[in-house]
Length: 406
Image (cartoon, rainbow, N blue to C red; front, side):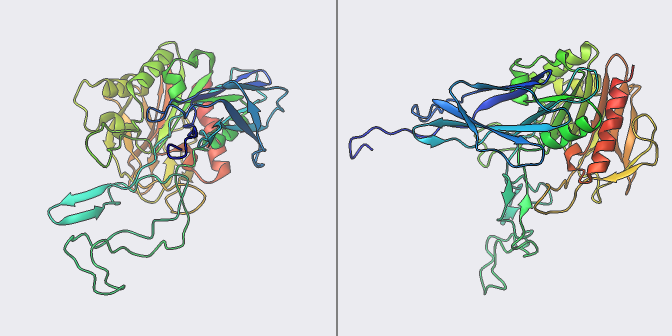
């Protein structure tokens, strides 16, 4: 453009602070454009909103001039999903996360699903002596959408190991277990699984990004319960140590919003693979995150990498009937991300909370329920990682019954 003397426009960054709220049978979508600090021309002039009804595909979208959109006459019992792209003369941004709403049959305030699973990252790295490589036994990372690159675990970490032939390629050699396999990561479309389960329990639901909640753009007090979806969110270092870690599961602003909600008698359902890991590990005693865990979620951390088989069993009747068993996903495949390192978490010291789920293989505590001046259910594995729909719906129905019972 400089050489030929014409103006250029760079396509925008994705929108942020996305939220999908519900008023009766009307949905309102709001979001914010995101400025590009490296390119002033990358500012949106319009947006396209895509809608998906139930399990159908997304439509061709509708173009809007302002960062908001409304839909009316929503059909009860149907989940409506939405994503937004920012547009300008340079093109379209990457799509937003997918949020959703649904009108239930219960005469009660909606449940709010908060999407806190933004993390996309490579695996952990090993750098010790002459050993260099990807340490996926520590952390496999989170692919963006569907991953085609991973072929198997690295086994040659010696940086001086030389290539001999293609069967002994030297440094960086990896197993070929997953060649040609599509591996699911963060599709940013997990609100639908939470929403479907909430609808199946009879309740309406709305949804919001955690950024919108932290910015005070969503009133948690308006909702019967808050379902915080954390997936595999956790503090993750950048490849270069010059920047602070990204993807903290429950940042201080979100802790404050949830603490305020709990103080007014709120009901919280929190699930993720690193909930207690991120609130405890690497933090000193008295850290606000540890205080939040003890005083709001009523949990303490025991260990990560708590289980491998994915089998969970209810051990108290407070949520699911004792002995009820189900599984979360531990397999690599194209449909659902694998949970390789769930947390073991226990009731906080002195708390009346109780362990309600345990990992079947070793009896470590997999879920804690608290009933007091507010209520909270916290799982050490992600709710959406339960692949069986009937099991997900059963679990959500009983969690909501525990949280919302008089």
